[in-house]
Image (spheres, rainbow, N blue to C red):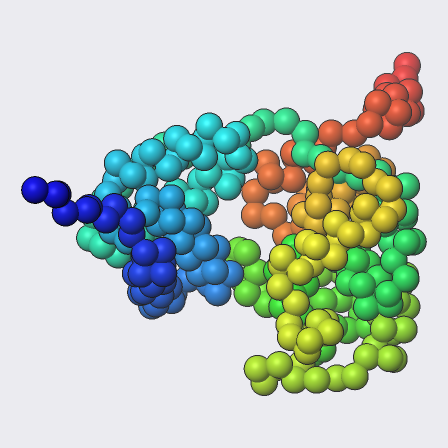
Length: 292
């Protein structure tokens, strides 16, 4: 008697449909919990990847442990792994399950940064006035990508040379400074840029498709100009607009407490990560200040 053929194949379409449903439920849960939009986007993306890995729309803590081990084995950044685990922990909380994990401490050491020549090259090769205005606003304002994307016309004060930042990483509003070079570039940009509304707001920068810029779009834009400039050093937008300005200011003798204010850090220990300087600057400062 012939045995019935067993179908071990699970339809991807059906499987994906179940995962999509759970991810949508998780997204609603995060929003009801009051999380910021960018955190909701980050967490839902990470949980979707976890569910796809588990091939299950209701995995247990063991699957989460295995997934964490997999991420560690791939030598992904500790920040990436921690954020993924926080997202998964929230997912289990939604399900009424407790999952604990060991938070990986960030590696100590000097952050990557570009030198002045690198920054000049990257900005100089930019022949698009909108992109140039975005790059200079990022750099001189010491902005995070999300802060740049969230800027509206009313947040810019060209006379005072300031930017009002709303709903920042620290859950507060803040004021960022820009310089005269950035102001002139912004004036040239605004002179040719039509004003539009997106979701009832007037974004300072919008895409060619008339949408507000997203972090990933800013990343791709920056990386393309970095490559065009021939800059081979590691680092993307965050290195360009946060690590680099901080490092250059400290290297030129700016008080670390002022750098802390300009970067809008809550803890001076965060700013002290940028207190590393080049050998050349260290020698110059040593010879200038350590004398008898």
